[in-house]
Amino acid sequence: MYKDKKVVVVMPAYNAALTLERTYREVPRDLVDEVILCDDASADETSALARQLGVEYVITHPRNRGYGGNQKSLYRKALEVGADIVVMLHPDYQYTPKLIPTMCNIIGEGIYPVVLGSRILGMGALRGGMPLYKYVANRFLTAVQNFLVNYKLSEYHTGYRAFSREVLETINFEANDDDFVFDNEMLSQIIYHRFDIAEVTCPTKYFEEASSINFLRSSKYGLGVLRVSIVHRLTRWGLAQPAIYAGRSPAQTG
Image: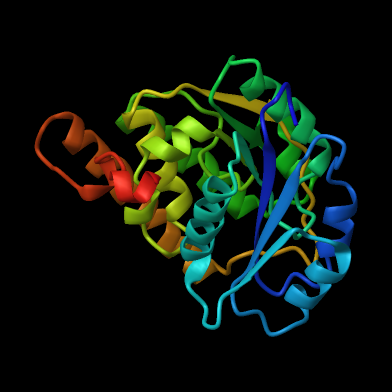
């Protein structure tokens, strides 16, 4: 708990057996009430290891639903179990769980309803081994996105995020894509609904076991990001009405 607010960590997992235990052992269990892991049809022992470690809720998809589909299952479950603060942490040990108390403090004190762990602030990305082409693409896409959505973030592409319950109950994350662009659609929705976003400097690690997408999928993701930002601007101008910017229905929030 954080001042009577239930804290839940959610982990979108795919073939994470080699790194899950290192990640889980650093989660501050004196603060975090429950952990939810969703195994997106891994070919390894991710689900079995999660249960062995004591993860409270282990969801196992019988078929791969994609990174976005994985997160949808996690956020639904987090809301179902009564989470007030939800922290999304990848189980690949690329982001340090030691920032969870800081992120919860910002949300729990009502300062910001959304917190991102930024790899760009403080040059953590390059020092942690981010490939140069990914760093350059990150900076380019972020500059374009800041212009199109009329916001100011150091990056839109981090996988380390924390949300208040109100945010997850407001945005229609169920309407988002099931692939990697899901993350960008969520931030676009959050900005569209005028929730403010905080960023904290986050060191990151790039190593063989850490999850990553190849150049082709990175290119597809980049084009998807540009599409999301353009649609966001068109919606602001009243020239588009995509479902992702509608609020969640009572059935979804209940």
